[in-house]
Length: 557
Image (cartoon, rainbow, N blue to C red; front, side):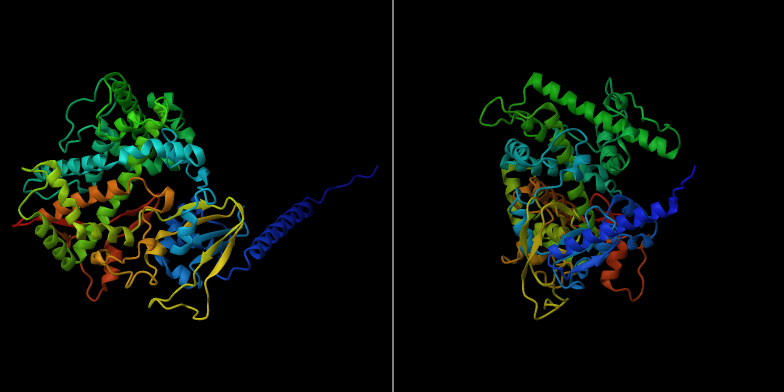
């Protein structure tokens, strides 16, 4: 009898070689299909959560894939170095060997204008369905229905309500500050969104009384913790949190509620469960008491109907959409205001120009005080430089770093040659071309590179709010709210809230850098100082991590 032995190393080596050859063949086929596109970078892997985490520990991880930090640091130079306003990331070890990143307004207009041909990859948005289906996490007919029923919540009367509530909250904030150094500036947007979204009056005072019966924490506390811990909630696997019943019992699905991680996760688990319970109670109360005439988002979502009176959002849909407006509204506005206050602290000339503009419009008046709400709201249209300052903050620090899309069919997209810092083409002989997007191609729209593209923005690194006063400013190259049918439905909401906050803060306070915590460096250039002060974290959105500022009461306001 002859015994045959299997050469295990040989078999494994053969499998690995076969897999590698197959991957290389896949890359070659995909590369040939897009015409051997010249604007490319090669990395072993495509961007993923593992690389993002490793990149925060060591920059060596950037050899594996393009992480958000690397792309943010390079902005448009990533494209000018490649020669085109659309680049390809070739990754032999990823399931999708080629991924495209788009920084061309012409391409973006084509892509965002056709949501059928270029849908969202919904699997990337699944984590945002924490409380239910919503406008952000749907596509096709489901999205169309949500959009139809949600849109009335953002009509003009609702925008007026945003203005009125923002002014009220700001005046209460000033009373709370008194003559002391301002505090809790970063909570302004959360206070506004909680009032406008839920119809619950948010106050600046502390919560000394016990939580309502049946609750472990106050509504405002749950809302604050949820807004601060959303990244933790999305990063950890579902088994950590357990199902709804487990969360309501404050269980953690396997992590002990002791130690730093355990206590942090427990607090977050309690907050997410509490917020869900509060929202369910609000809906039940309004279902009994009626919601006609309510101006808050939740009330209007409950009242919204389609052509048929029975066509309403479900209870879970109302909760899901209310939460996503809370999340998106808070992230966008609070971070953009923080960046803007830092920018103004660094540029006192621009701050003074903005203050003089506000004073020329408001004079000694206080919006919302001693005047009819309609008269106060009319101030909004005259504060054009304030809106320009908010836009400039969004341009320099766009909240969304990546807007993922998918090609549903084989199609072509126009692509422009890249330009140098002076706005002239890198390759003077290059002509616009059409790039083939194969069916199933994943790609990202990349707002930071669009916003720093010298073809459209003169001196793109400079902080110049007045550039938005030019009637011909390049609107198609400004995409902090995305564009097309899937553009952010809350854009006007954010603009009105920010205009009120900026106007009232600068009317009463001068903003400066805290020199004790952030000392000047002799000879440091302005852009370098800005990057040092306004440190960023590239997570779910672009987030400020530093910005030590001082708010000093103005003698004349």
